[in-house]
Image (cartoon, rainbow, N blue to C red; front, side):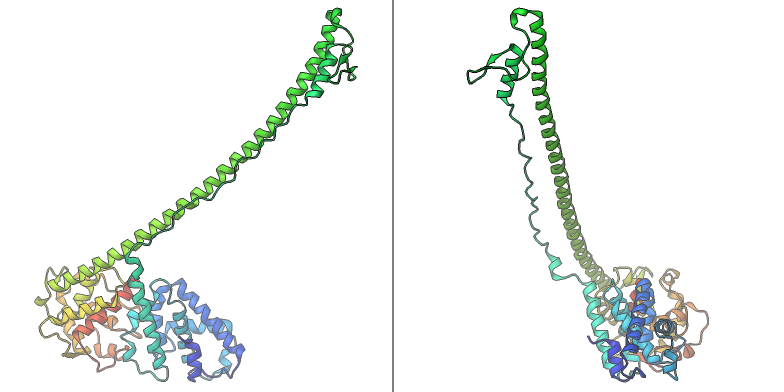
Amino acid sequence: MKSILDSFLSYGLIDNIDGSDERYEKIELATKKLAERFQEEPSILVRAIISGLNPSVALSDENICKAKECLQDEWKAYSTAYTDEPINLFRGMILEACSMVANEGYNAAIMWLVSSDVLPLLELGKEGELLREFMTSLAYQAESSCIPDDKITKLQKEKVIKLDDIEGLPADNSVKINRDNLRDRIGDAAGNTHVDKDGVNTNKGNPNRHWPNSNASWAGDFAERMSEAIADVCDEVSLNSAKNNKALNEAILQYAVELKDKLENSLNEQRLNTQRHLKEALTVQTQEQTRLNVLWWSEALYSKSLNSSYRYVSNEIATILMPFDLLDEVIAPVPSSVGYTLSETVNKLEGAGFHKKISFYEFLTAIRSDKDHIIPSMLDNLSMPASEEQLNILDLVTIAVMKDSCDLNSLIKNSLVPENWECNLPTLSRIIFKQAQAYENH
């Protein structure tokens, strides 16, 4: 989908850019900053999307003010370019920022649920087709976030986990004793001279000063020289053994560390795969349970909140009870089909068919006069709007039910709903259900 800001510019809804790339870059930076605020506080989106869509939005609207603040931060002198506040520029920034965060979590679903039924009530200009296209894209994203992919319905075959080959232990670095040198040293220890392996009578520089017949003197020299020869050989063997042991220990430690890391990686991969499969299976199970709950509720026409059938209350009261009872049966947001099931269920009530329209003012008057049938626990699901600007359909229903006294004509006049708007009860119930989901998830 084309950038909303670019489209507003091409439609001539944003003035005084004068082909200046520098000005447009500042607007883009301000829009990104606004999107960051939406990311930090997604609950803003419930009202922000309406502010962006509504061509008659007030300059005092809180989200218009947020857009203005972001623009001032990036373009200090923007006011010198405009004689009047550029309301359409602020709208474009808000809608572009909404588009930027639509892919995160249930943001697309929340924005679509709260605004899709309001858009047809607004008097749009050149931007009408663009905004309807934007709403369609939100609808697709919303539906995909509520319905599991086909690939989830069957477990995927995971690859076999195989550890990499680990290098062997270091080669043996043992040192062979120099036998010729040892023989010569033993020969020197045995006497003043000795015959070497070549048959030559010789000594190697440190012979015994005595012969064996000198008894103790010979034995002393022999012991001294022999012990040194044997000790030197033992020292060499010990040193070589220590080197080999050190190399072996280092290799074993490295082997253990590598094995530990590879086992941890493989086990964690297996853990993540298991968690993913469980999540996918739970998603499918939840969807199936939702369908079962909705079908059972629709067939029974039974209200848990009333402990009786919807047929025992007025159609207007049933129209607002049903969406909230249905919300207790599902995990919101739900696929669009659930809302249409609700409409078909309302259609089962005598005199509440799709063919019969009622003015919205008459509907609000009827529920105010019969609100004694609305039990207090239902009011826990409703919250009074913080402001009476840009009141949505559910906002008006909430005020009608919760306020002891109010001027319905004045409220409708200041709302998003046209003064003479008419709607059938099945459709109106679905609208309330959609907007209640958005308010519940924000």
